[in-house]
Image (cartoon, rainbow, N blue to C red; front, side, top):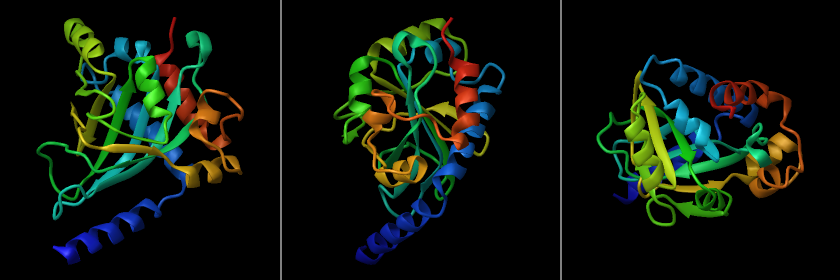
Length: 223
């Protein structure tokens, strides 16, 4: 067991450092575009419209041989004041958590909608745990208005995953989210926090974030 723990930690560290931040911005944009292009089975448009923030983690990894060996890096963006447009992306890490029954060893795209200000404050903290520090629920899929309303009222954060072409709501209870200072420094050329990026708007989105910003505005703009 000790060997497995060491192996999992080593594997996780290697995978987390394998892809550079600019490349992953493009992967996040593609993941959102592909999911929203699934007819009648995407993230409900109404929920995207009402969400305060979105988190996209493309290619989150899972290792079947050890509980909790799940890890990924992605990006968070929140609505600008007045609900017009989206902030520059801040970098996040996701670690651990329960995904229910899934095929071990596969990569999963993870999407999270933060539905209220309280959830947004959690997201912008240094680190928090889904299901403990913030209420989390599996997000509904499709166009069920009642499902959208119930989900939006009962959880701060709604979560979905896509694995091998299958898209569904999942509860990522126990997963921890924390800001990724290394990737922020890589993207913005200096040490900067997600709160500075997302709330204080002290920086412009890097050019590599262009496709992600386009997709965010395409699928979740407020009218």
